[in-house]
Image (cartoon, rainbow, N blue to C red; front, side):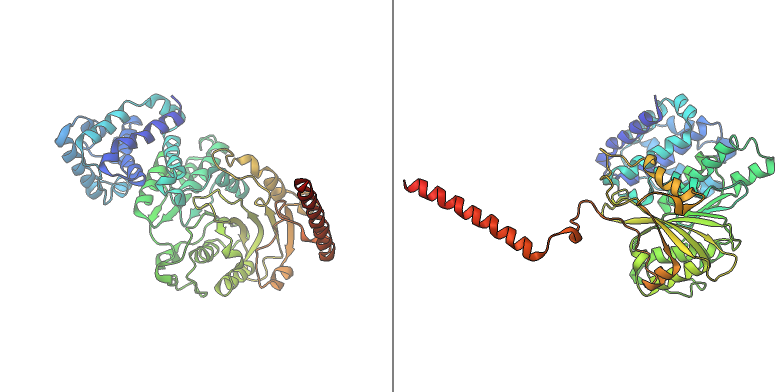
Length: 469
């Protein structure tokens, strides 16, 4: 059985819980609790993870009926209050939405009967990641906001090229997808860290990859995802845009897709280090990200942001200008529409390096249009990594100006300043729209229309004459 087949089987178990009125997102959270116990048993890590005897998978599957429901609730409470480390964090304030013992028993039995040999061979982390992706692509779940398309993540990671020993961070980490991709990228380059000295391998596992997440249930998914991918870095439950975020500093690599929208009630972020005030969450995350980077000329970031960040006046213009002063904003990728959970949202990736000083770091910005004249992505036309090939070649070119690609254009800092620091630039001509420059003169259009009307009138008169005869 393949990983995808196991994922589909797990996902279909949700049908068992319909009578309990459980949503897709509740179901994935519920599965997280149960899968964690089963996966700990499968990997023989129950002791190391700190799961106490009496509250393990074998104890859970031994129960039946009302006793099973009672024990399951007790297990969640015990692990959330008396568990250790990551276990305590995953089960913190955990509650079950499953009311019928038969439903709970059916899920436990179905999970126990899965092909766990194949799952271990393919990687339990990949299995869980597949489940999260299934949740995100299922429109009824509403979880797409927490899941960035994997082809986009992988491209961003390749272009930032994280190195061993660097500190990587995602300040709005969702299910931790960016950090997992960065970790897998380095594991592949270092033979799963076996080629590294022990102290470097330990750093990669325990300190290299960190993140923050505001939503408790999503934070729970991030912890589980990190653990199953062999990452023991700090995944915090916190509001990055609060004063807590001020201590997040000194990162070499930042990868992020911050949440869209405004702060609750339209209030500004509560940060003493934010001298430019804004209620726009994406602008504040952008502000936080470049302040959190090392001032060494090498630290780098790739951030997914909606179009409004590129052109918003007032606080938007100020933050963009400050970004281009403190950082070298060298590349913007205009992404296709329809690849995120909100089909109409237009997004971009901003690539920038923090300078060693805070003045005149951006000299020019290269913009690649991967939006115009592109397919409508969906189930019939999946969004794959192949679409990034030309962009990645242009991005990595030794001489960017020599790249022959109409989608690839450069704008000087002076040109951008002349447009009030707007970065809403670089889109090519849309083939589906009329090119008004090529239209005839109005008098010629009117003359042609008159000739057509006169011809039609003559034809109608002919029909009338024939009918009279």
